[in-house]
Amino acid sequence: MAPASPDGLKVIILGGGIAGLTTALALTKYAPPNQVPRIEIFEIRPEPATIGGAVNLTPNALRMLDHLGALPIIRERDYGRTIDYLEIFDVYSGKLAESSFAGPEGKGIGNPPYKALRITRGDALKGVLAAVEKQENITMTCGKRTVKIDETKDSVTLTFEDGESVSADLLMGCDGIHSVTRLKHVEPERKAVYSGVSNAFGFAPIDKDFKVHFECTAINFARRGMLLTSYHSSAADSVYVGGLMQVEDVGSRDGWKAVGADAEKTRQELLNRFGDAKIPCIVPLIQKAQDFYLWPVFTLSKEGKWSTDRVMLLGDAAHAMPPQGESTGIVFEDTVLFARCLTRWIEKGKPNTMKEAFDAYEKLRRARIDVAFEESKSVVKTVSDAGWLGHTIKTFVVPWYLWFTRAYREKHFVEDVTTVDIGY
Image 1 (cartoon, rainbow, N blue to C red):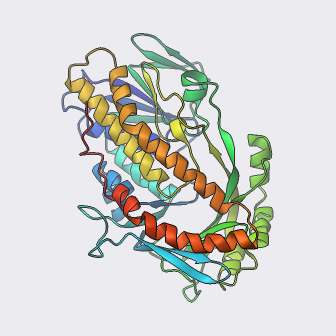
Image 2: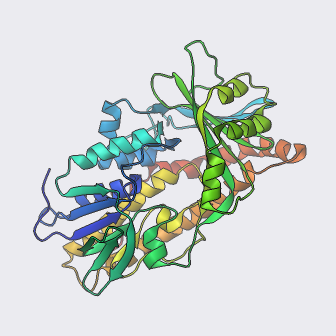
Image 3: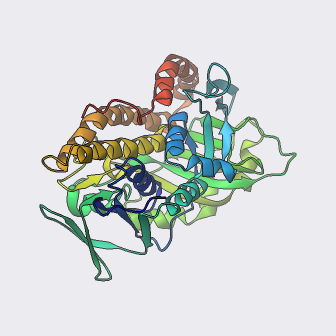
């Protein structure tokens, strides 16, 4: 791959997770050929975090990964499991509905068509990381804690805990919900707020003769939460078990770590909530799941500040929200749209300041994020504790809601932000 160009921007990315890595790929791919940026990624952890639950990569998410060169690697390594359709169940009465990714001809949605992919966060990250490693202009350094961010008219400088400092033309804050970039520089007063729900997840190894009630992925609604059960590899020898449920705030990040460390207590909580399920495999899957972890879902307030003159926030650092089915795809679209806006500014001869490209991106993106944020609120309501009547109403509403919103969802699935007019 092409090395960095002498005239290319120098870019720092804070955060070596999937948002930071895809941002590096997008800035590289869409840069003018003679102005490939020099990109340095700094990650606070000692190595990239390949742990976590399983996510659903919708057709628009897979389209972006394909454009960025990561999807072929994911396919080649046989990461994840293709989803033709997502099944929705009431744990007390059975199947309620399906949400299909097969498209009109059974090949997927969009042109070219993509279905969906259930994949662990770790495997998704490894696929993207492999794509990054092919790029000569991108380097990553782990174990770097940022303690100070200074911005001038001409540059932005990071100072690390070890005393080292580094400067660049542009800083990308891709460092998640508790973003140092946001909290130390862009908008310190905008702090993460607990949503009221948490995700308890683990992976259940199963034998070939273990019977499940789903083809690939099932959303199982109960009176006290929602349980996701899904294969996440072609081998089908393990099921991801993730319970999204209302949990009282424990008050601090250290407190959450302590609660989350008690795997057996988390397992018992899931059994208390879903143990009365009439679907036979639900309880055994909870019992089989290993290394249960409790992950509190934090959000940011709607809107907020995304940038300064030389610093831009992307992904959860800018607009974290409860999971609403398209969260990962939204992040990938962020990175590609921003890269296209920045490239247009470069191609125009860098008129005025870099903030011109930032403003163009925000004008394009804010409306979509605001809609997704409002949609995410319904997720919190849907998984919150409900009585018999409230749950019964929900089981009637969900199938109609899926039917009514099908065209709207597919509109997002066919979108390709690599070709959309950025109006700039």
